[in-house]
Structure formats: C-alpha cells, structure tokens
Amino acid sequence: MTNIAKLTIIIFIPAIAICNEVASFVGINIRELLRLSVWVLLICFCVVSLPTGASNQSYIAIGFLNKHNEMIWTFFTSFTLALLTAFQVIIFCLVFLRLIQAILNQKRFESNEEEDKAHLVRGTGWISAATKLGAVETMIGFAGGGFGVALTRRILRLLGRACLCIGTVKGYVIYFSSGP
Image 1 (spheres, rainbow, N blue to C red):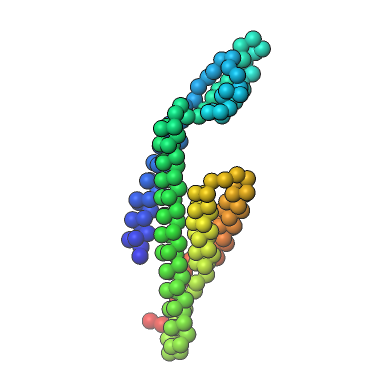
Image 2: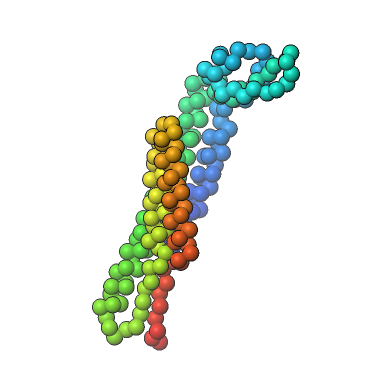
C-alpha cells in the first residue's frame, strides 16, 4: 500500500502541476489596445482599463484569439481537473482502506483477550472524510456555473480542510503491543 501511495504522489503531483501551468499559458492572449470601444472588446476579451491619461486611453485585453485557442485551454484545464480528481479518489481509497484495516484489527484484538494489543484509529477517519470532500469539491468543478457553484465549492473546500486539520492534530493510525 505504501508503494501505491508513493507511486501516486510521484506520478500525479508533477502531472497536475505541469498541466495546470500549460493551461495557464496556452491559448491565452494579452494585448494592449488603444482607443477602442469597450463594447467590442467585452465580446471576446476581459478588459481592464488603465488610467494612462485623458488623451491616450488604453486597455489591456485578456482572452482568446480564436475558438481553437479556447478549446486548447479548455482541454488542459479539464485534464488538470480530471487528474486532480483521480489523485484525490486514489488517496481517499488508500486512506479508507487503512481505516477499515485498523477497525478490523481492533475488533480482532478485542475478541482475543489473551493478547494486550490495540490498533488506534485516531484521526484517520477525519483524514478520510477530508479526502472525500476534496474529491467531491473537485468533481463539482466540472459543472462550471456561477456564484452558487463557486460558493458550494468553497464551502466543501473549507469543510475538507477543517477535517484534514482535525485529523492531523488527532494523529494517524497507531499500533500498540504491550507484550514481547
């Protein structure tokens, strides 16, 4: 199980970072435009007005030159989101498997009264909940949308990070044995 976790981290984290950076730069065009109508620019670009003086009004326009560039950007953005979702689901499965193992071992130790052993779950359940909330939050990102979707994602992200903090403070699974 540790090898799977290491392999997942080694493969997914750099791939997510690379795809996210490529999506940040590929297809996006930044231009400085002089004395153009703002209404024309709002159709294709996000326009930011720069206070450069009354006689020489200029605008910075950020957007896509054509549909092909927008499709490339959308592909890399969606691919990054898919990689992040897959990574979070794999991590959730590994943590949840570890939680189930700890619970089953604890039940086994309780039924066998000859040995004095304990398998404490501690914060593993919280960490499992955090990874599940993170995966759900990332999947909601595929929906796109406006304010409601963004607010839902931020609330789930807040809850996921709170669970992760609680799980980290409580600790991970510990195995105790008082015997030789």
